[in-house]
Length: 134
Image (cartoon, rainbow, N blue to C red; front, side, top):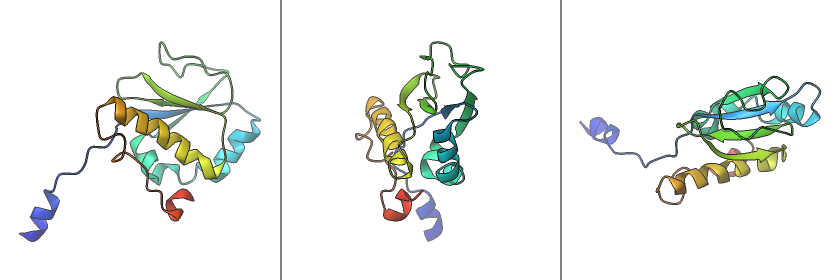
């Protein structure tokens, strides 16, 4: 019975996103760096579970198939798209392993604030050193 009561504890609200678009192109050195440093663990990361990555070749589609999206100009460009299909925010360029997750987290936090939650605190990533390495 104790196990059942633990399972019924409500979880805090978490911002929801449909996906994280990554606009890329062949030969992009910063895209390759992202692929080496972030991509392998991204699907298992907290943010990766909230916003799965979808890659888009910038030469094939600068809007990622989303009408009204401001076209991507640089590679890589990461665009967080909400469940409603609208852009929540974007990161142009790859800031490196140390800053990628904090930058994406800031966009997600802004999404939480817009949704009227607690200022993004419950949607924030784990900022432990182990989490920052991912």
